[in-house]
Length: 419
Image (cartoon, rainbow, N blue to C red; front, side, top):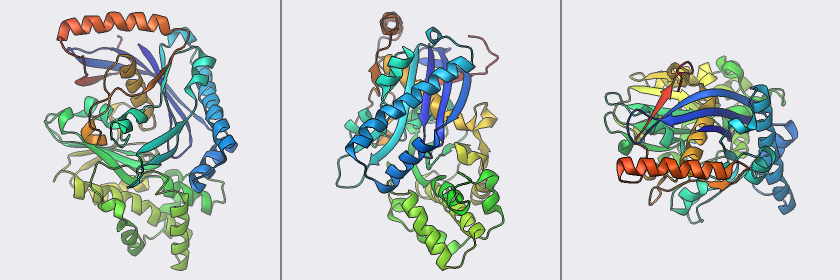
């Protein structure tokens, strides 16, 4: 099955796409995949600013929100069609689109109903492309009492669980999240949670000090020459979120632009230079990650494998390595996957599992009461063909295993290896 995964993260930089081929793995209840092509398309500046403004103010007119859902759906559909045209692919060659959409609000506050809102109307995507689309992955986990995140832990555990090494799969997007995989415990030993701010404050500082000319701190240049204010770092890390035990998630609702602006004001009052402020914001992200491992992780972690935009910031990566001297900190590229494409690949996998009727959350990571099938299916013009194929595949797998064919392992095939 050929699945096109898509996502736009909390940094709202753009739409990441990953075309994956999924095929049977070497053993029963395993799956192999190849990454065939990948691409990122930046959001149109007005659309990005509209999303950021809504996330910052935390309210919007009902007509604006209604229209934005369809505008984002159109943006995702356009990205799909442009991607296919650039790669010389016909629509009929893609079986499924799996779209995470754009998170507008993720509500996990105590005393409130667990809920989440991702926009990017999948019916628009299915209508414009003609391809069956799976979307809205987080809500099923939350309906089962979970946090709806981190869903990437499913991908991490299936692909990376190791018999000898204890691993931490750290994503640094707008928000940071980690999957911890103790040695020789497989999927059942996995734990996961959001570590706190990732790039969200660093990106805000870059926009603020460059007066909008830069959207992120390229190569950590703005932070490189600054001095870290450790007192300010310690004050931020005293926030209750960092003391809260997993499972836990967060987002721009807590660690957003308003928080970043308040930190910049505090830095100015302490007469920190822009470089000092950027160094301090970067240090907060690095130290929040290390603190999370010390408080909620195992005694020793052999490798920290970093993905997301933060993995391209050498200043941030060096700080994480300094704070974790007994661990080897490396970028996901060392395993053959581009760091920026991991979440798009994850949602391709989740979409694949949805149409096969298999649960794709890890309750011990999200806090859900039970393993749950994720996502909503919007039929495209190829839907009848997919249903026939799935019926045949599931019948074969049930005959082989005698039980629901839940995945136990995922294998990554190099691009040169033929299926």
